[in-house]
Length: 299
Ligand code: CP
Ligand code: NVA
Image (cartoon, rainbow, N blue to C red; front, side, top):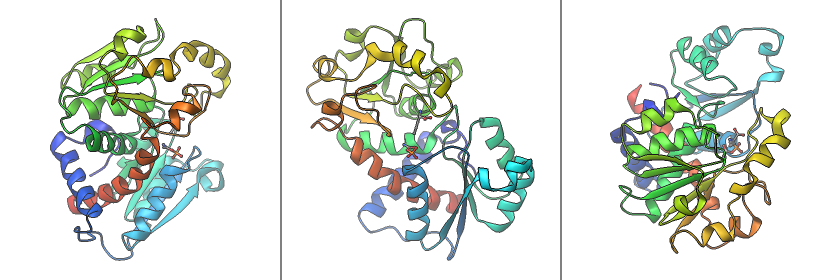
């Protein structure tokens, strides 16, 4: 079994992963992976949290993770994803990959027999969404009907995976971004099979009665050439105190990090009392451990 897309996990599967995470948290979960299991981490883009949380997770579960920067592997000299995957899959028990193209991730999965985990692509960030919804669940007991507002780059990998995962729990998803800037219709259509998804550029309307406010960078990895244009386009959608005043008083503020203070979010808000971004980041380790145990059980 792989986790290539947030849509690979049903609500029941996600609940199973959350249950493992709860058990790990309370010290009750048996460490369910084989001794000395290894994970290949193959990264085309930078990472702090995702890489480290997978490495620490594998060590804490009694195995190990081996990091491969693609620029220093034979991939950089033309070896294909398919051939690389055959090798990684024959040495290691898991592969986690952070790539530009989702199709390249699928090629890795098609050419290896071990579970492959999407550690972020241009279109999805499913492990982030697991940690995100798990975090929301600790604050908002009843996820059904909880109003989640994703602000800014509503076509981002983070938005796509979060909308799918949140919708499966019946959360009301509002995508708040500049007029004329459209989210990825494939994800919106899919999410609408489970819950309400509203696309809007109206800040007051979106924030009214909001329980969760979520943002991410205006310039994702790989979009640097358009940085100036994007920062200008999204500037009115900065998460700041003025925006927070429009939401519920107990609304939480989330950010997958890394943050760019003064761009998509102010420092005041990110470090303020409604922000759960640091707990959300901490939960990446817990949820990655739970995911590895879950995938071990299913494989
Ligand atoms: N949130 C997240 O994926 O962070 P990194 O890019 O540091 O892994
Ligand atoms: N949307 C961001 C997420 C970083 C974790 C990016 O792709 O750069």
